[in-house]
Image (cartoon, rainbow, N blue to C red; front, side):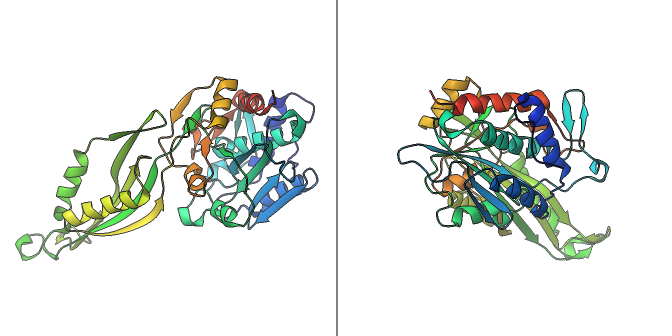
Length: 367
């Protein structure tokens, strides 16, 4: 299956073909190599500078940067969540939709980046263009290969703004909330459930913390004129070994989605303090920073002025935060449907692909 679209044809058909080709190469997290190989082969015969880091690519569409000319990076991950057994069949069209694993999250977005790189020559754009296509986004923060790309000397030097083509329904989503998972453990002492006073029930010890979370309202915080909602939720609970034994251990997973006005260290300290107040042990895992909303960035302003699209806060986590940590302002804009991320029977609207391409073309075109 070729990764080529339909050059010279209608963008909607070309994008449909290219997205189908990308989706036809299954790439669940940890299995991106074959897809990366194919995209690398596509890029090397078209563009002057292609760099590979593990199973991730940086494509300098225009080669060396021109001093004083802005550089925009279009970013997309190559992996999907694990493929459901009933989705292991070739991509198919149903009405105006393409149905396939990763169609919305986010191979449709990757197809848009490739289409733009082929169709819009340097002289037609106001900026130089870089494609950043990377592996292992759908897993833990520390395993994401975008970090390897960002740490590689000079690979993304000079990028003025990065746009992540995560599914946003073609709405510009600025910033993102941070995320920390915490394993909170309550210790007790086992006893026969007929005589619980001989022990200490660890599940009951967790009750006060759970009651506090139940009564905790979302905290609203503003970044770039947009309102983010900070929330803390228990997402898993485990305790007990038998029906007639008082549990000696209860473990919770807490997920803290904190607003962009809070640092990662401050959010971690807040979780640690919460556990301490309730007499529990805590282990912080998978710590991901928040990202400010770059609403006043001049290139973001250009995008809004030339497209007229809506703006929302990103009430979730994306790699815009990782880019911002490395000094690259970033935002989210992609053609995929947010409702379809990680779904069985995932689909993307073909008209949404064409609309996404049109928005980026308007934004990138000189003048």
